[in-house]
Length: 286
Image (cartoon, rainbow, N blue to C red; front, side, top):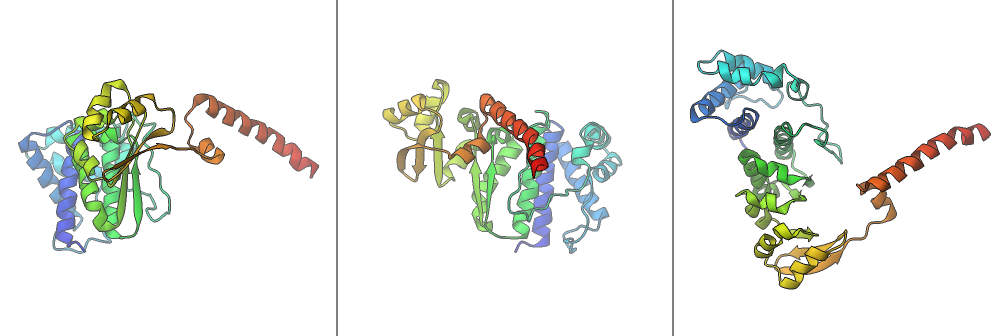
C-alpha cells in the first residue's frame, strides 16, 4: 500500500496539472503559488502528510479559490478560476462526486460537453478513477474512447502514459480508442502509450496518415493497402510481433447497441415509437 504522504503528494502534483489545463498554462511562479495553495487548502481540512485522511471530506474548488485569493500573487489566478466556481461550469466542478465506483459497469460521458471543457473533464475523471483504483485493488478494465482529446494537453497525455505504465500494478487493463491515430502520434506521449500496449488493432485508415502508421507499426506494403481499402469492421490485429488481418462481425443485438449510422438510428427510433404506441392496446386486450 502507498503511504498517506505519497498519496497526498501525488494528488497535489495531479491537481497542479489540472489547474494548468483550466487556466491555460502557468508560469513557474504561478505554478509554485498553485502548489502552495493546494497544500494549504488541504491543511484547512486536516489533510496533511501526517494525518489519516481516508474518511475526511475533501475540499471543494470554492475552498481552494478562497485560499488562493488571499495569497500574495494569487488574486489574479483566483479571478481566472471564477468561471469554474461561480460561472457556467460551476455545477460540474464545484461539488463532490456522487459516482458509485463499485458498480460493475460505469460510463463517464463527455460527448455533450463544450470542446473547451472536455480536456478538463477527462483529466478530472481519470484522476478520480486512478484514486479509486489504488484505494481498492481488483480486476478492472478502463476503456478510453476518443483518446486523442487527452493528447492535446501535455498534462493529460503524461497522465495517460502513467496509467499505461503503472496500471498493471493495480490489476488494471487499459484500452485506448481513437479515430485519429495521426493526431494521437503527434504527441510525444503517443508512441510510448502504443508501445506499452500488449495488443493493438488498426481499422480503415486515410491516405494522409498511412505512411506514418506504416513506419510506426512496421507494416508491409500489402498491409498498408489493406488498411486503405478496408470496409467497416476490417483491419489488422497486432499481438507482439505477429500481424493478422481480421473482419469483425457484430451480432444483430450488438449492432443495434453500437451503431452510429444515422439511418439505422432513425429506424431504431421509429421501431421503438411504433412499439410504444401498440403496447397500450395490447394491455387493454389482456
